[in-house]
Length: 278
Image (cartoon, rainbow, N blue to C red):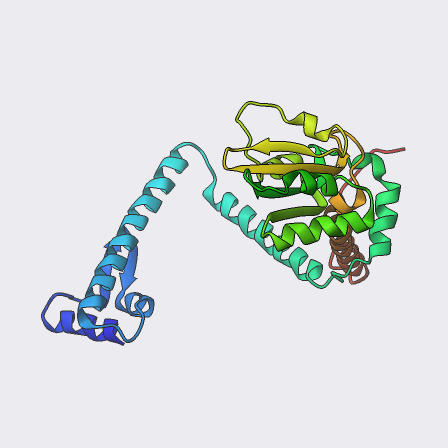
C-alpha cells in the first residue's frame, strides 16, 4: 500500500522514531492505523497529502475529546454512564429493528379500508385539497370561446371534442384526477402574491386567469375543505404506514414477552423486590 511505503520511507529518513505516528496524552496513533485508513493505489504525492490530513484530523479530534472529558468531569457528568446508556439503547434499537424488518410489508386494500372506516374521526384535512384541470392557451387563440364552452360541458362527447381541440392545437392541459393540495394546484397558475383565490373553489364553473401572453382556463371538479373528513385516497399511504408500524410494534412486544417468560422459566431472571401490599 502506498501509505505503508510512504511511512516506511519516512522512518528510513529518520522522520519517524517508532511505529507511533502521533500522540495526544496517553492516546497514540500508530503507523498501522494510518496505513489502514489510506486507500491503495494512490500516487506518492496524493498519499502524502492524505496521510498528513488524516493525522491532522486525528490529532485535533483527540485534543477536543480529551478537553471534553476534562470539562464534563468537572461538571459532574458521568461519561461512562452516558456511554453505557447509549450502548444499551443502540443494542435494543437494533434488536427491535431486526424483528420489525421481518414483518410482512404487504397491507391489502381491504385492511386499509377497514382501518379507515373504524378511525375516520382521526383523519382530518390540514389544508384544502382539490381535483381539477387547467388548460393554458395563447391569448390570441381564435377558438378560445369554443374551447371554454366545450370544457364546461357535462356531455361526454363534447368533453372528447374539448380534448381533441386542445391536443390538435398543442395547448397545455394539466389534469389533476387525484387529490392535490390547493396550494400546489395554484402553483400552476399565474397567481399574485397576497391575493386570495378561494373563489376558484366555489363550484365547477370555468374560471379564467391571464398573464398577458397566455390565458388559463381553470376548473375545480372536486373540493374537500380544511378541517373536513379526509378522503381515503388522500390518507391511504398514511393508513398503510400505521398498520405496518403497528405490526412492527406488536412483533417487538411479542419478542419482549417471549424473552421475559423464557428467562423466568430458565431461572436466569430473579426479582428481589419486596412489597408491603396486603
